[in-house]
Image (cartoon, rainbow, N blue to C red):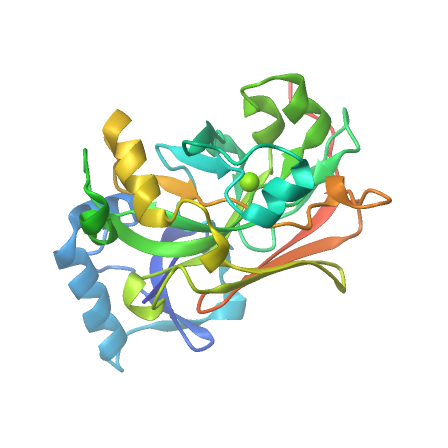
Amino acid sequence: MKLVTFNHHQQTRIGAVVADTVVDSLGQAQIPNDMISFLSAGGCASEAMQALIDNDQSTRLPLADVKLLAPVPRPGKYLAISLNYADHIAETGKERPEYPSFFSKHSSCIIGQGDAIHRPKVSDKLDYEGELAFVIGQRCRHVPVEQAAQVIAGFTIANDVSVRDWQIRSPTMVLGKSFDTCGPLGPWLVTPDEIGDPHNLTLKTWVDGELRQDSNTRHMLFNCYEMIAYLSQAMTLEPGDVISTGTPAGVGVKMTPRGYLKPGQTVRVAIENIGMLSNPVIVEPDGLL
Ligand code: MG
């Protein structure tokens, strides 16, 4: 299943993408309106969605007529790993980490397919990082590596957009990774049965027509299951939590000259068996007060 969170006529709800339509869950009592509740409901909600997909009488909206939001617009946790591809470690000149190195992206940075990334007022060092992300499907703690696959609800695409000068100012990296709009996520959540091996997927990032990143998830140092085992030693993972699995080489900060994102450009991240996440870059609009 390709699960989406979408808005149609001012109502947000869950659906499933089939070809160029969204199977609509409106009015289906067994299918909650938000993704965290949907995932928390477990098998019964998932089976109800599958039944809707299989029923050719169910309501289908043209994909072009709905506004896709991030599949999980406000997860309880959004964690990301740094330095998880050997070629990216090499381009940064850093040591290969002994332990997985996680940081938090605050969930308020998340945007969906087609939403604009803001080039901040306070920095022109805006950079992309194409990444495979996965979403937790059940509450879990101390998950053994060999059982970790069963707690993954699905996979999606993340762009770990980073404001590089703010990132390196602080060892926590939190602010530089959490500027508003620095969390493109989507376009949908693909269930593991449609992914195959998550550790053998091509991953590519373009800025406009220029291919910047071209790799495969098999080059991860710590794989998805090892990340779950490690994280769940420290904290309970919960339905909807998003974990992004690191970026390969080719980020703008390591290009000569530097390839930072500029207003007017579009950044696209494509991952095999998932699809493509596309976001334009604009000047940050005036703030709220
Ligand atoms: Mg990253």
